[in-house]
Image (cartoon, rainbow, N blue to C red; front, side, top):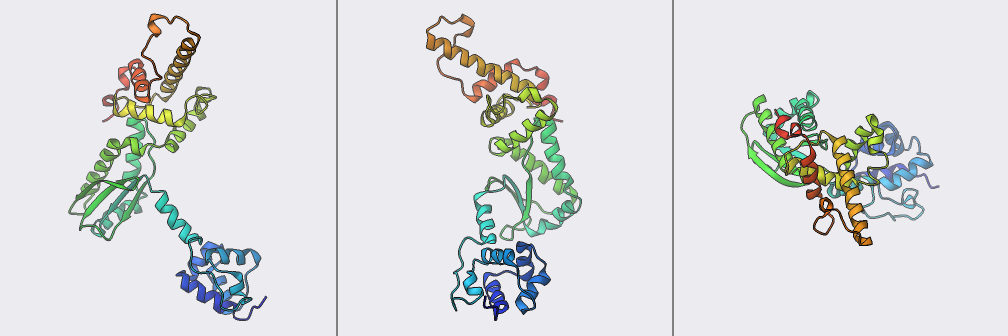
Length: 303
């Protein structure tokens, strides 16, 4: 390998790609001092680190070792930072609370205390609605109006307001509005990943409730849709998840039985007769709600 000038070429391509020594070191899994030594020619990376350098800097080893003088890869879309940037666009955070710099002190204090208000809001959702919410991202935005905050669901703004002041009451108001918007957009907020966590939490304590049932019989998507309808349309908490799964399983078994009877041309009992077609998730939720105790209505859980 032609090591003469390796450090100079490494430094040049690093700066062209816009990375600091610290950033490059973090991506390579080495110390900042090690990168500095590479660039000063005091030491050289091993084979594993060389491979990482080529990937992170989107640069050919031929260029770094001057096997092909002057030849290097052009900046592309495959280095680590670009991949992370593209992924952030493809995978929007579900819930984002963004705010103008004038509100930064308010949220800085929240962050210093490990976000107690955000944690409490998610705990309230679990206690009152029986729902696990995704994590809430807080971020400042320089292009907003002074003292403006905005709530985004899956990258789409759903609420915006300007609030003067940085006293604790303002934070209570903003978090309250966030909870309100999350409930209004629950069909967009509650995703299959959240439902999976809810089911797994139930599985730990009651394994035979979900064993061979979720997702084998009841898919996460169907359970998600039924839970949303129960909460939003019929005003029931999703807390009795054991009961909901059992009732949903019964409904699906009944549908399967009716479908088999129709295929065989058997006379159905009057109590089992219904209009043709498998019911949708809203109809399933309605049937389940009819069998749930009124004590599970939301007004009995929301304080």
